[in-house]
Image (cartoon, rainbow, N blue to C red; front, side):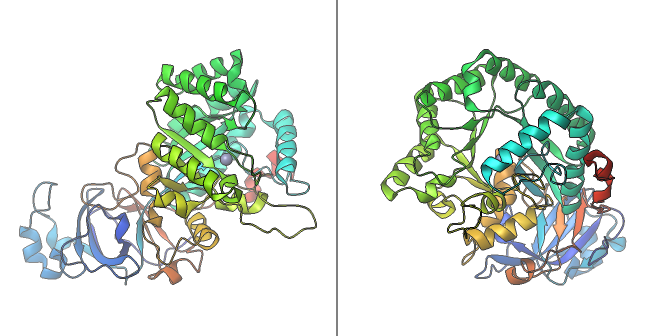
Length: 462
Ligand SMILES: [Zn+2]
């Protein structure tokens, strides 16, 4: 795909007139004006694969001429730009520049099975039945690897640099999928950083299989995860899960309350268990849809516990919109998403992510975190003002994944950037930005989305 702008070859050049959401900058440069929409226009110096400097547009050395540039020391990164007379510039004419995107909740092992295992009625139960049957019949190592890698190719081409994926780990599947994950994590290192999370019903952690799975996850340096349901023994099960994780130094990432059931309160039980156990590691919780249908006093109580327990929440708006409140022949009445604004008001960290792509849980999707942000903005009203929401697909998931120099723009961080043609929010979020340019270590990558036909044989479409 050809980009809207051509970036100089080599890794020493300036991006001029770049509009950046100020919330994504490690520091707003001196003299830069931040608009009411939270945008600021800057010049970005790229040097030796890193961002060397971010300056207010027109205030940088580039505007002062090559002589002063040559003599100018670049903050924190060593000597002057020796190649100043040959420094290249590219004028972005105010197109937005974002750090590479971070997708913290996906299911790369399920992805791209739609043609083979469609959801007959689009419901949550229909999805579970379709995926269980497909997994039992087809999920060999080769099958999982090919579909997983298809998803990674999409992510990379769209400008994502880190992905956390759930891995169905029930019964014999753990022994198949975790080695595939470990192999691909190694192969893709430097392009897409991968993290893996186990996915089994919470009840499994009350059994010997749960303990074995915790060992398997620890061996892969993964994250311990489960689907939390409310049951009579939910407190004991959460405590067991937390103990297994604490003993092995593992973080936790759960699916909680992915339904419109007013009685679904596993998030509250989890937060209480985290506080009781003084669990020392990170806890991330996905979905939490049912919060949106519960009475205000119940919501207040739960959010208070979540804040106290330091739990971070991941919302999956595209999948929620697809599955929640779906009854054949009836028009959906609610959007299915959790209470993003109320969570944010309590300073609970929130990320927004893809979830499923082209499988029975979500029949669409292309692993494009910009699409996720665009849809989240529309579904959840993450605008008026946009504020810090761009962090939900960049800085916040990067922090939660322990990637300190990802998801932000500032001097000294790798020049892993996405250049968009759209200047304002309305321009950026109205088109798919298919002509975006992705820089990795300062160099434009070849952006090639894999052809669906690559999977025809695997899916029996040939
Ligand atoms: Zn999920």
